Image 1 (cartoon, one colour):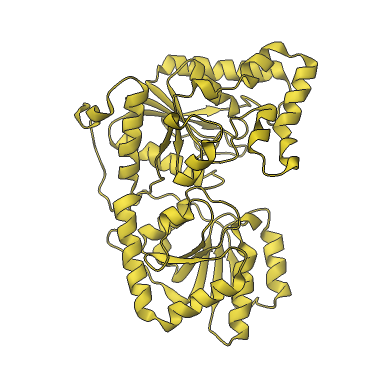
Image 2 (cartoon, rainbow, N blue to C red):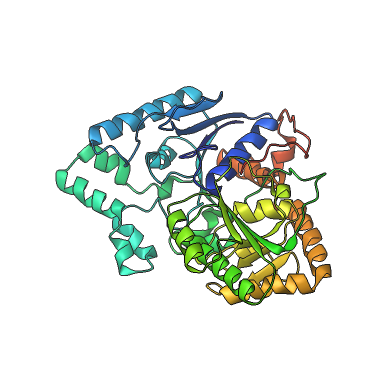
Length: 414
C-alpha cells in the first residue's frame, strides 16, 4: 500500500508519546514493504532531512501565521503534494497546531485519524462545548480564532478550515477503550476502532533491574504527570528511614517548579533531574518506574516501553492506564494525588522481594502478548484495507513484501 503518515513532529523533535508511536508505526510499515511517506513540520533549528519525509515549512491552519490567505495557500500546497504521491490511505496522527488543516484532507483521500488526544482537537469552534469539563474550556484559543475569522469574513478560509471534518473521516483509531468511551459522546461508535499503541521489542535479550530502593520517572516534566507526588513520596520515605533514590529523566515547562519542590522538601541529596535523551534504554536504569498521572492518560508509551523492558510499574488508575497495568499482576496501581500510597508501594516492594520478580515477568509477558509494534500494525493494516474498500480478512493475502527486522533490533524511540 502507498500510505501517508502525518504528525506535527517526529523524533527527535517530538513532544510526547504520540509522535513516538507514529514513528514506530512508520518504521514497521516500511519494514513490511509498504510505500510510506511521512509528513511533518520542519523544525525551527537546523536538522537533517530524512528520506521518505515531506517537511512542511509553514502553517496549514493556525499557529504563528495569522494571514488566512497564506494559511489557505499552505494547505493547498500540501494537498497538491499528496495528489502527486497518490496515497491509498492517509493516516493523521497529531495535528494540534501547524498541521491541523491536514484533517481536511479527508475530503479528498481515504483518511483515518488516531485520537492521541481526547480533547477532540478536530472539533472546531463552539462544538468543543459538548466535550468541555469546565465552562472556561469553551473559550479555547480555537474558538476565539473561529470568531475572529467569522467576523472578518475570510470566506474561503472559513469554509476550508472550519467546516467540521468529522463526517469525512472514515475511521477514528482510539489507542484505548477509555478514549473510545469518551469519543462515543460525539462520534458514531461504528467509526471508532480500538488499537492500542505498540512498541518495538528492544529487550529480547536484555534483563532490566527493578531496585525497590530507587524510583524512576521518564517523560515530560509536567504537573499533569503528578511529578510532585514522586518528590513528596521520596521525602516521606526519607522521614521513615527507608533508603531511596529518585531519578527524573525528561524536560518540560514545569522543571523549575519541580526543582523548587525538591529544595522545599530538602531532598536534594536523593532526587536527581537529568535531561531528556532521544532514545531511552530502560535497562540502563535500575529504578522502578513511577508514573502517577493526575490526568486521564490515553495509552502511555512510557508505560508500554517499561513493560517491554520488564520494569515494575507503579501508576495511577487514570484513563487508559488500567488497560496496560493490572494491580499485583504486572504492576501496582495507587490512588492519584497520594504520595503516601506511592511510598507505601515502594515499601511493599522492599518487603516482598518475590513480588518484584513476579511483576517483572508478567510485565514482559503482557508486552509480548498485547503491545508489540507488530500487533499494532497488524490491526492498522486491517483498518487501512477496510477504508480503501478491501476486505479486512484479506490482510494476510495482500502481496506485501515483508522485510521484517529481527525483534531484537534496536529500533526503539524514547
